Structures are given as C-alpha cells and as structure tokens.
Image 1 (cartoon, rainbow, N blue to C red):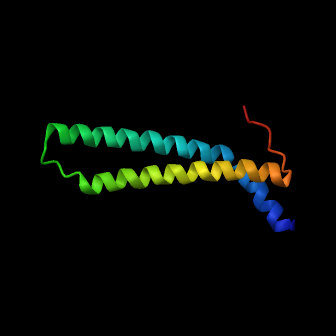
Image 2: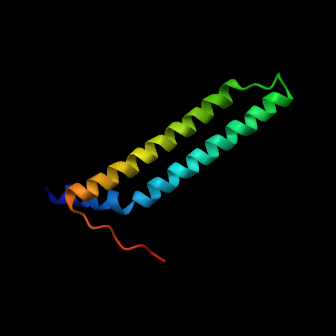
Length: 89
C-alpha cells in the first residue's frame, strides 16, 4: 500500500462517525419532510407534491450513500489495519 493510499484509508476511518451521523440525520430529515408534506397534502388536496417528493427521495438517497461510506470506512480500516483514533469526550 502506497503512502497516499494509507493516508486515504486513515482519513476515511477518522471520518466514519461523521458518515453515520450524516446518514442518521438524512433519514430523520427525509422522514420528517415526507410526513410534513403528506400532512399538507391530506389537509389540502391541491397541495403540489411532485417536486417535494423528489426532494425527499434525494435526501434519502444521500443518507443511503453516507451509510455506504460508513460501511466502507469500517471495512477499509479492518483491511488496511488502520487503527481508529480514540473517541473524544
């Protein structure tokens, strides 16, 4: 493994908590927006939902990608033998 590959692996392992936090936040935001837009549509059947539903789908897809990045960072850390930094308190 080259030096740049090792730095990449170390950086990915350091950021794994960020990836899982972004994934959780994306799911919460996406679900909240879906519920809000659903409620608005239920209250007013003429409420335009098309673009808003596309926005919710994009937010949820972003959350899925962040979860995938987290999983890759964990696997990369194990495969490369990169030691994760201690948790900050």
